Image 1: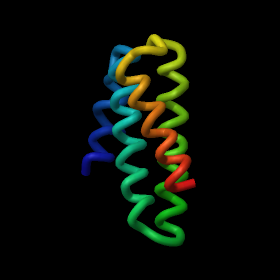
Image 2: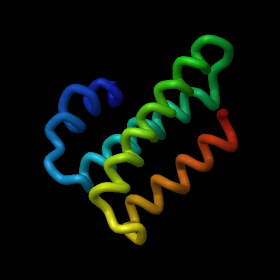
Image 3: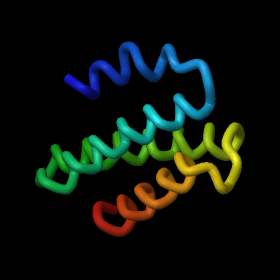
Image 4: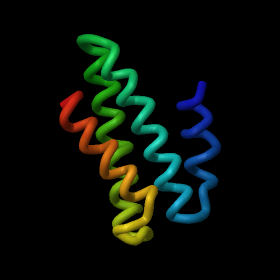
Length: 87
């Protein structure tokens, strides 16, 4: 699966802050999509995973990316959509 590929290869092998944020954001977005279309326990698990991935991405973005970097801005947008739509 895409989430398995992100966890086992892409995120752990990412060398720059930019790529780490990009892949963590992708992971969080996939979990957000799952949370938007599932119910009950599945929704809760997906939302928790999305929250963790967004928080991890935000931590790296704050450290390694300029506030005007497009990936950091995209992360902020998607994280806010998650907080509004899912949480």
